[in-house]
Structures are given as structure tokens and as C-alpha cells.
Length: 534
Image (cartoon, rainbow, N blue to C red; front, side, top):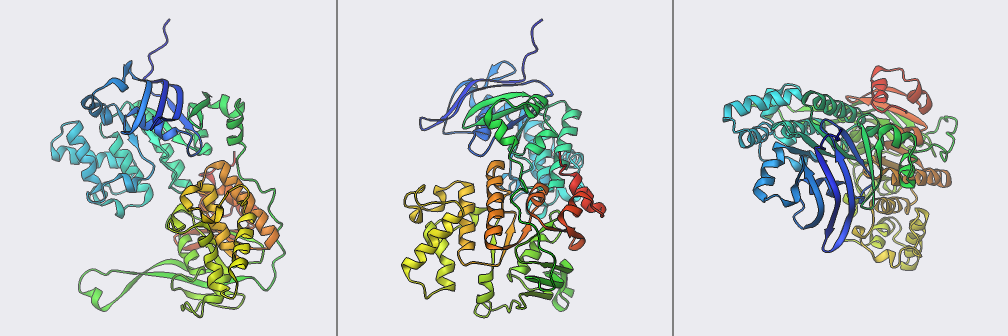
């Protein structure tokens, strides 16, 4: 008996740019209704493989075969590919804010697909678009239909993207890192929604991701890519319980570890940072003439009480809108706040001159190292900037020596990177850029580092390296960390104490082991359930 014909089959697919091969002879098939995960780190070739299926890589040189129900898509005309895109194969992109048109309402963008692909009349298309928004779980879909992308949350934008992709009822959905920018609870919600819609419509799904926790909860079959080569594929059970390739084994062994974490000291009456009744508000526009006379405020953080001891980590968890970022901005003295906030007895004064000494003691490392490092400055200029501001008495040789020392401490040796100080950020990988950002913060010898999602933009193996480095630095320097993250694994590896925020309120706080393993509040338990410890 002949095996059923695959919905999509890649045969010896090779992709090159300017004669340089980036994907080498990929063989992969997807059956109707099947859920396949394509896993690998940045640069492994996952996304270009998916984009080549729809021939969206204009400058790419493609060879081999991309068989769609037996027909080679590499031989189709542009007009034929235009029909297949959306009708038969749809795609959800990683960042909906850049994939959605900012000048059109969300509803009109979905309606446009229905008018073009299903030839529906405008009114019928609008009605169907509202129904699709409702199916993807968006609350008040009639109102969201009229909203622009910037007026929706990250989860709502991703649901709108999903509604747009499903508008023409495709047989295959390519989902390229569809949950990377979302909170942990939203990630599993979106994945469960995708699974429900897949079962309802019978479409197949190719999930492209580096998040192995999500793969566990979604895929029927897993394919692993490394440097453009498909190194292993098989059922979910086969790959996860008995990985054969060393690269697959390395990915599965990349969960953050608590092994290098320093023991938390006994609480003392003299904390490094003390907050009492910390409150953050934002002004709100009041419609009509009332707005001329009465100002309204939105309270993002309501009277938070917490402290951080020297050499310890306070982890802050909560969904988007919980007040995590507002808390971090207040601690950094970058926005006005109410209540009491003292650092070794000193408070922010709101003046660059008066805050200079305190600014040296409190530094920050941001989520996206590429966005936080100036592309016009060399590594030497970036790392030395704080020294030049806070220690102007140092000579150039002294500055260079301290910069080299800080870079060496974070694992960037001049022996391994010739002309390191004169290179620019674009010449480094994401993990190396985050090490540069760490060196920039460490060179002025701070007592507290605010870490705002410092590893969420990194691959799992690089994430583990950075967390291990942070543990070592905390031991050696006795630095305190305020770590803001939605990744429960990161908290398990790094935090001594955990604070849980919901809608600007602290709903739970205590020792990390107690909060993460014996949560008292229902909201904390819901966050932990969204990121199971399996």
C-alpha cells in the first residue's frame, strides 16, 4: 500500500545568497493536519527555510525541490505563487508590530485579505473579519476591529495576525517564532489557541522556534537544524527522550541551572535598596473641556514595599502591564515616583549633577543588546563611556586597562578578538553583544544591576552562558540584582527572593524556593502553570 502524499515535501533544498550556501540539502515532509516543529538557534536556517517555501526571499538562490501536493513551487510563476500565498499556505511572523500596517485598522487589514482572496463584498468581509477576531479569543471584537495595531497589546496583535492568516482557510500555516515577544502565560495561551484552531480547521502547522518548552506542548514531530543542516528529526517522544545528535543533546541540556548561585545572606536591618509605598503614575488625557481643568493619572504601581540586600537577587515576575517596567524605571531614577526609595540612605534628586554619584552605583542591562548599544561607537568607546563620566581623573592608559579588564571578566578576551576595542557592535553575535552591555555596566563598579529581561532575546545555549556569568559576577563582586523577567526558568536559576506583580500591586513576595514551589496566590500559580517545570 502506497504511503499518503505529503502536503509539503522539501527535497534536497539548498539556499544560498551571493553564492554562499546557508541551507544545505534539507529533506523534510509535512502530512495534512500534522504539527511539526523546526527547532534551532539563531542562524541555523529555520526562518529562511520557511520563507523559501513561499519564495519570499527575492535575492536567494534556491535549488532542490519544494513540493506542494506534488507540484514544485520553485517552478511556479509569480502569478501562481501569488495565488498559493494565503490561499493554500499562510504565515504568521515573529513581530506583529512590524508585520501589521500601522496606517490601517486591524479589521480593515483582515477584511482586505478576504476581499482579495475570497472575493467577498466589503460588508461581508468586515462581518467575517469580526468573526475571525472573535475566534482567536480577542475580547470585544467589534471594537478591536476599529483599532490600529499600536492600540492593541502584544497578545492581541498576535491574535489579529493569526486571524489574518486564517482568513483564507489555508491548508498549511507557517508560524515563525509566533510567541517570542509574549509573556509566559500568553505563550501557552497562544499555542493552545493555535492547536485548537488547527484541530478545528484540519490545517497543518510548521512551528519555527528555539523555545523547547513550547515544542513539548505542541508538536507531533520535531526537526532540528544546526548551521543550515537538518541534523535530526523524529517524533516528539523520540527526539526529547532519546536525542541522537550532539547538537540536539546540547539544546535539551541548556535549561538554566542554579548550581553557581551564591547562597542568600540572612536578612539584615540595613538593605542596599529600600522601597516603601513606591508609586508610579502616568498622566492621562481627559476628553472634552474637563481635560483643561482636571488632570487624570493612571497608576502603574501601587504602594510597593520591598528591599534588596547586597549580593542577592530579587526577581520580579508578572504579565505585561503588571508594573514591572515602571518599577525598574523608578529604581533607576528615570521617572518621577511617589513614596520612599533609598539606596544606602540616598534618594534620587531628579538632577543629573546631584544624581551623578548614585548613578554610578545603580546600572542597567537591557533586554535587546543590539538596540541598547550605539552602532556608531566602538566597543572601547561604549565600555569606557561610564569611566570618562564618573572617573575623569583617569589617564587614557588607565581607562583602556580597566576596559580590557571588564571585557575579560565577561569572557571577551583581546587574544580571542583581535582589535576588540575598535570593533563595532554589529560585528558580534547577540550573546557577545550582551556581554559588552554587561562590561559597560560593570566597569564603573556598581552595587546594583537592574536586569530587564537580559536573556529573553538570546538562544537557549547562550542564555545559559549569560546566566552562569551573572552568577559568577555576583559571587566575585557581591553585586545585587533586580531581575525583571517573564521566564520562570530564569527565576529558578537566579533569584533569592521573588516578587509577583499584578496590575501594579504586589500579590506575593518571599523566598524564591517558597514562591516558585509553594505559591500562595492564585495568580502566581497561574503564571507557574503557564511555564511548567517538566
